[in-house]
Length: 487
Ligand SMILES: Nc1nc2c(ncn2[C@@H]2O[C@H](COP(=O)(O)OP(=O)(O)OP(=O)(O)O)[C@@H](O)[C@H]2O)c(=O)[nH]1
Ligand SMILES: [Mg+2]
Image (cartoon, rainbow, N blue to C red; front, side):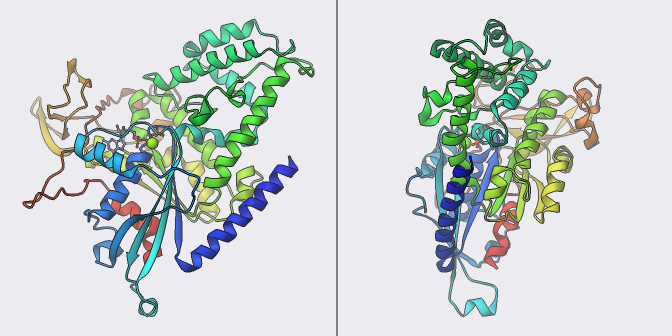
């Protein structure tokens, strides 16, 4: 255990030394785009690059709107062993086909180099400046693994079993829990049983994700998004109830525990060591609307998952990652994504709700010296705003083209028809989102309805040039995340 830590630290020290040397030539910001599955990471990265490269409208990004940014382009990334982020394909999907990119199944990276004129007279004498912005994209499921680093097999097993027996998840877990009744962890190890349990456990995780309940997925993240590890022994384990006297050597219990530790050391640690420990700034994307739409249980579940993940970054704590964080993350933006599903009058409420949901994590990060802000965002704005009159009441609405197959009030859409739609109002009192699943809170009574829309049709200029992707507050996000580095 100590040995691994040493190696990890030594390796990181070396790579950081390399990072620092390169930093002297051209400053670099490693931006962490953090978020659970479907939170909007890939769309955010694509929209950020597209707007900077294609002259998007970014009035709140001051270096850019004042004309000091003279260019932005993709350049070869620093890490040769990571695939490049498929920017061109994602843009083609969003702009030409008007479809959203697929779920990410493997890690990728990109480097955007921004050329700028410094606003300071002193710096101007050294000529134009350059800032490298390095961003990594990965399947959101993998983020769930971060808290595993601090848990041993017995602790993870008992937490996973307690979760599976909770009211919100019991039904999805039924088949796996039933099989578990017949398993003895002290029996001799058996590959067939291990595989069967891993398969049933994975089915349960998949069911939670597919559920309309919108439950946040549980680790291990690679069970749902294996990348190139599909079928390997490090992925063939599952939780077991702890036997009274512990499992003897050669038993199923020992075998599972060994594989769990292998998963942590060969899968989880390298991912976080190579990509998370080196971050300078972080944007945490949260799809709060999806959870609000599903009700209090989903909201509580989302809050718990994110708080646990963000807790791993706590500097000074003896968590494995905290000990490796060489760059102190000094700014964190918490983005409530897909805000284009709401009328702008509700954006403040969305921000307050998210701030309340993550209050403990925000407080901890602020106490450690990071600046934290919360913003309602849409990386790609798929809707416009309008007013719908219902029962002689004027309702602030959004207008967009629902994805094919989406339904509203029993009507199913074909992906071509535009509708005006009143999604309902978010609860006014952010506290109400914290009320437990059994309470009849304001959230329970709020009738929210969300429809997924197609990406927008882009306008073209008279010369036939496509304008950049519309957004909500992407410029504010950029200003907060890198504005000071372009001073
Ligand atoms: N209307 C709207 N929908 C969005 C926006 N961003 C993301 N979405 C929706 O959210 C879905 C998920 O977005 P992604 O960017 O693929 O999410 P991700 O975090 O990369 O997800 P994984 O790759 O599965 O981890 C998309 O398919 C869209 O349906 C946005 O700005 N506006
Ligand atoms: Mg993605």
